[in-house]
Length: 137
Image (cartoon, rainbow, N blue to C red; front, top):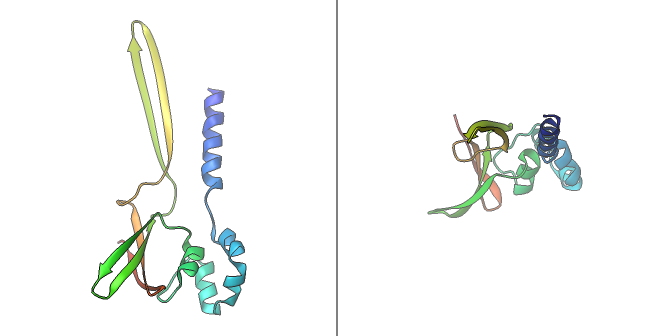
């Protein structure tokens, strides 16, 4: 039992360690961030985006998208970045089995996120700038 709790704790610690924050992304893009207008810096620092933002501004504000795809319209091609709802998703499972007088119990934990049903935000880029922001209600 102690070993199971230890393994679970290690898995959770690794999952949380892999998450980037606005502050960690700001450090990686510090010189670019310092060149942006004050209103853009304020929004990025708050994890917000706006029309006209560049891909780098969006990446610093929101992190990497979960999916990227291309949309073709009459105006040409657009790149769409998809972001899931924020926060970890947890799944728990327990199983019990028996065979010839022996009983076994097992369990598992999944840490991750789902996609498509969990899409919360789509950012559309045309000409290297945000041209549309779609939010799920």
